[in-house]
Length: 113
Length: 122
Image: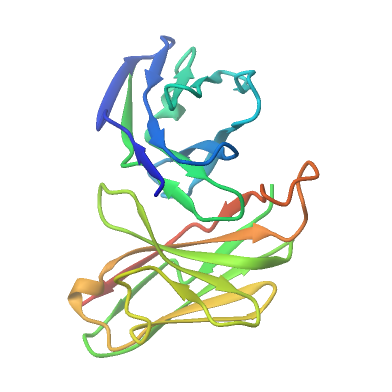
């Protein structure tokens, strides 16, 4: 069975600083996808970044980057130059092939001005 | 990116009544749609997977007779909460998976999420 664990219920960071959100997962498959989703107060789920397991290079999207450690089954999200608009719930998610997305418990990120 | 809409955005109903929530993919065709439930400060819980033209697949513990799902076209899926009770009050989110392949891999078809529907049962 697939599981995704986010051990940080809440995180806070000063505006313009860098913050890292942690995620670990478990799967028996070698081919899968990992995602970070953002859910702002509007509750709209927004895809932040995705990583294909077969790619060794860490994905990057502007100020967002991941540290993908396949052997350790770790997938952390780094947000650089944090902005007030980054405040949201962040969910880590795992998907194997055409199967369903499995979400972690979420981390609530607060940005302090 | 592709847009998924949900209607209504919020609904309040009396206990015992039925409520229908619509999920539409506006600019793409979706063979598969997903229905999630989210309680306050919690993660998304998958309720069922809806495939166009066939019966939905429900997750363990989800009552199929209570949460009726219909996916009649490639752009519309509906969730009907029958005989709603206060414990059914929650935030319901749908997502749709693009029919087109991405990067040559069918395995990855991005899911696009609707804005959600807040259901309150009095």
